[in-house]
Image (tube, rainbow, N blue to C red; front, side, top):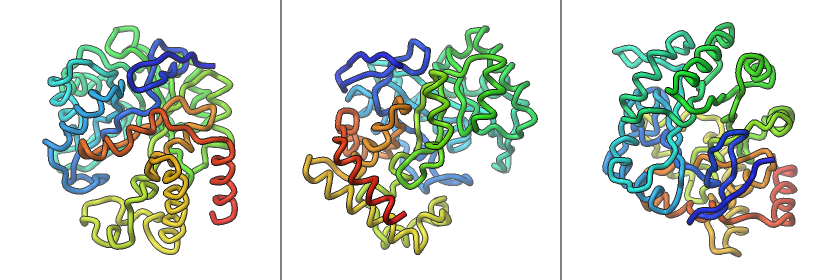
Length: 325
C-alpha cells in the first residue's frame, strides 16, 4: 500500500514504489493544447492556459500531466511558460508514442522514443522528466523494444520513472519482465468502468500507482454540461462525435450529473468534485487527472483534493448507476 503525507492541499499519496508523493488531483493539460489538431477541445486562449496552471500550482497541486501530442507540442510549451512564473515547481509528467508530420497527421509508433524525449525536454525546458509514459501501446509488436528504450532513458537520467498509459494487464506483464512500471494511466469514471474488472486489481497487487484520466468524462459530469452546450460545440471539439455526448446516452449521462449535483449540494461542492471523489474512492486509484482551461475552472475543482464520499453516498451512486447504465 502507498504511504501518505500532506501539503497545503491535503493528503499526498505515494505513486507506486516511487518517491513521488502526489496531491490527489493533478493538473491535466490535454485541453490547453488548443484546437487545430485531431483530438483537440476547440480554441483555447494561451493566457487562460498559463493562468490555469499558475492557479493550480499556487493552490498546492503538485503535478502536471501532459503529452507531446497535445496540441502537437503546444501543451508542453504552455506548461513550460507557466512554470517560469511558479515559485514552487510541480512534478511534470508527459507521454510519448504519438508522432506527427508537417501536415499534422498523427501516427502511433514506439520507434522514435529517443527523439521524442529530447523534443519534450526542450519544449518543457526541464533537465529531467519526472514520469515518462508510453501514451498508447501501439503498435503492440513494438512494445518490448520500446520498454527497453524507456528503461535505458531512466538509467541515463533523462526520466525519473516509467509509466504506462492505456495498457492491458497482458501488456503490463510483458513490460514488467524488462523494467518496473511505476504507474498506469487509464480512463476511469462512473461512465467508463472497464478497468475495474482486471486492470485495477492487477495494479493493486503489483504496487503500480494509478492516475486516472477523464474522471468527469471530459466535462459530462461537471454539472455544467447541457444539451444546448453540446449542440454548440466548435467543429474541432472531439466531443462532438463522442458517443456519450450523443443521444440516447447524453440524456442518461446528464441524469447521472444531476444526481451528483444533488449529493454535492449537501456539501457545498459541484457535481464534478463528486465525480472525481467517486474515482478516488477506489483503493487502486492514487490520484486523478483534472483538466482546467482557466483559473476559474481550476477553482471549481480544487475541493476534490480533500472532499471524500461517505460509504453511503458511494453506495447510492453505484445503485443509481446499476439501475440506469
